[in-house]
Image (cartoon, rainbow, N blue to C red; front, side, top):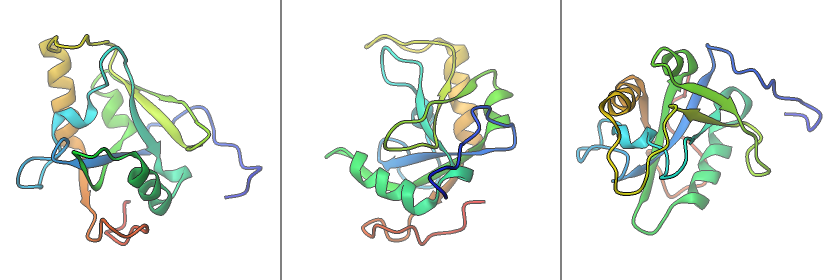
Length: 153
């Protein structure tokens, strides 16, 4: 991608969004399904980080993932969801580039949770549906810096 390339601010419905998945926090114990928690915003925020994969590469996403992981979580792979699938659930996707990721966007559900407070049922349902719609791509070699799993499209 050329440095003069400008990513469109408007995110089309047919774009695919990549969410980094960590184990055990974002996948079921058997490692086969994405948990709703993968799409839950941090407390006091309404934003879940995703990458507009059309404007990035799996290798770039993986390198970023390996720098993000916390001691108690292990990088596991990626979940891919279509923008239209997010919007059909009445959530939104906002382009929010950063210095580290020019293809960064946020999924916003329209609710900010407070620490120790459960999400209202409507939002729990929304996150559960995102998790069901997301396709999980396990990384066969999580310790390498390059992605060599299945094609993400």
